[in-house]
Image 1 (cartoon, helix red, strand yellow):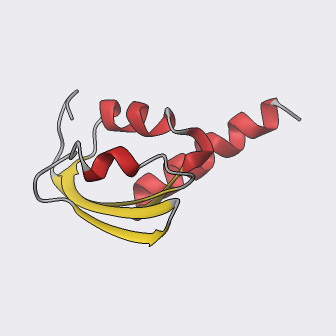
Image 2: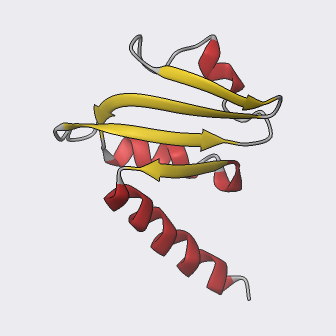
Length: 89
């Protein structure tokens, strides 16, 4: 996923409410690993570049995705979504 690629990192994502189910059929990467947690939750691990396009794509899932790793990306999402939540208070 493009827009100024950086060094590849191991990215771990947890998808809820079936939001990531399509990734079992339409793979993000051939090397991705998916672990099914339950009928509506899965965890994806993949080595890829953390780009602005990846961040934009993930934000499109809203509360149906949690960034688990890398820590820097998780903190960025935590801060950004906390700020967004404050706007709705």
